[in-house]
Length: 155
Image 1: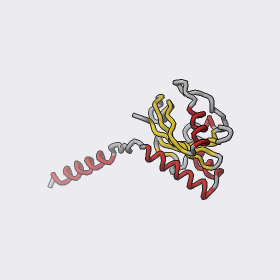
Image 2 (image 1 turned 90 degrees about the vertical axis):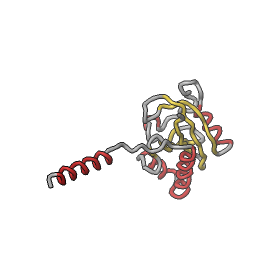
Image 3 (image 1 turned 135 degrees about the horizontal axis):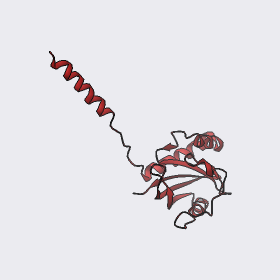
Image 4 (image 1 turned 45 degrees about the vertical axis):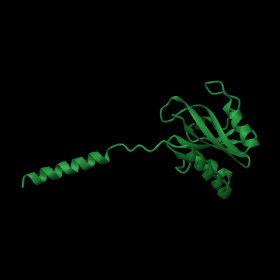
């Protein structure tokens, strides 16, 4: 009979330690980036650009999931309209500011959006999960006069 309380305690401790193990979500994929940008486009069409800007600025879980997020840029001016991870760049035109390797990737984003409406742009960017500069590829999608950007870090 003394074994039963010990066994129950051991079982409870084992169960708690199992549930305390960290759960690692799979790294986002290119498909995930496309889906998030398309979700943003559908939201803009249903609710308008201003509401989408508010959602992104408020870090709505529909538009930020770990290192994958949507940010919004004005197609005509290059001004960042909303950025859930780096709000300090909102209201700024960083079009011709290069990444660490010298690439003016934001100019490439705007040009691609204007000419083709969607596509991929590669560059270097600080990963919010690691705090390190890492290679990133971003899917861009033009919706009216804005560009939605959703990128993944390359491993």
